[in-house]
Image (cartoon, rainbow, N blue to C red):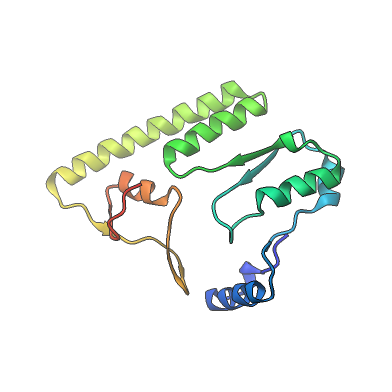
Length: 166
């Protein structure tokens, strides 16, 4: 559960609320529903470690698993930063869930589609200059998009306007 209602607030209101919480000493913006975890008793809990503003911390997840009487080892933290990382994570999740075949088939399909995109980009960029692209996750404050998004823009034929490479 999130302490900030991103759905009903403007970006400026979200940033103001985040700063207020930080000033009040709140470091965890998310709480894990321990009762729900206990009730569902999952064999695996998938989390991400993308940014401190975007997800529950690993220590908070571990504490929630302890409180729910579940093994900490059931938590799997994913940290994809490129499209290839996402494909590897799909295989990892499939393996953990006992669905190796389905995960492999999905990754094969996605890789095939990525090859088609790469071919189309190569053909299009052979005759034209590649466009400079700026990706933003927020306009207040200005926050450049990260994780796997720069990789996606590059694969789609764009050049990162900020000069970074994935």
